[in-house]
Length: 358
Image (cartoon, rainbow, N blue to C red; front, side, top):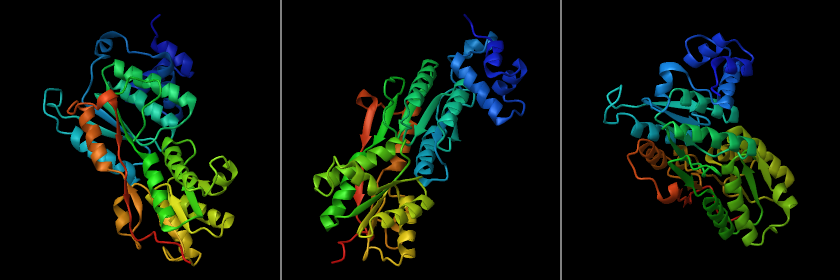
């Protein structure tokens, strides 16, 4: 049975006119109402009737790039590189072949992520690039799999950049996944080789794949060195504090780690921005880096080499990954075998880590 605009209106508990306004984008609608309508459109898999339906499988000159936080250099670098590759493509099209790359800032919200994908589906986007880690929630994973399948069926090329493959979905053109586990393990092995035995870890949000993979790498190194029994969950958690991927979280979490374990000789941060917060907290406690305590980050963001002391970190080739995702989205590069590529992480040893004080 064909789904009608009236069916969408009934599901969203609004008038048909409001549904039309949301879909056409030609009249202001409250954000909560818009999201309710788009959720109904998604749930009912509504497709426009009439002449527009013949265009449902066609694609426009629009490409969506989804990021958690465009102000975070991690996402900004990848998005900028992808946009460079996407723009100015030669060929035929309504804009002479050029594509309009639109960056969609989700704020880390799973609801916003699905909303943007729905909007891009309605606009018949030529491609979608999703950057950064995924949310590990079964309901969201199922919703994302269904949504990406619909996009792919309509002709949209879907590329994941810095994100592991989506379980149970074959809708993507390619998934470019960073070796977060390997990078996390090598970083902690470096600290252990220097002689550190009491290492605190400032982790990211619990529900993120990036958080879990980096933490698993860290804990694998700690367990292999015999510092903490891998079955001793309580001790692992005592030396780990979760928070957001921002400076404030790094500051607060480091103070909490010092409270739990005053004899810490090293702190590993979930990313470089968190590491900056950790360094500030340690200095405020009168501790010197690295003479009294070592600090390490992850990502190798541009500022990492310029802070004092320069930050030991794990380099992810963010620009290269973003550019590759852009080429894959445009069909200008052959997808990797099986559609999945693991991008290596490189340990960058700098001035913020040193052997622990005697």
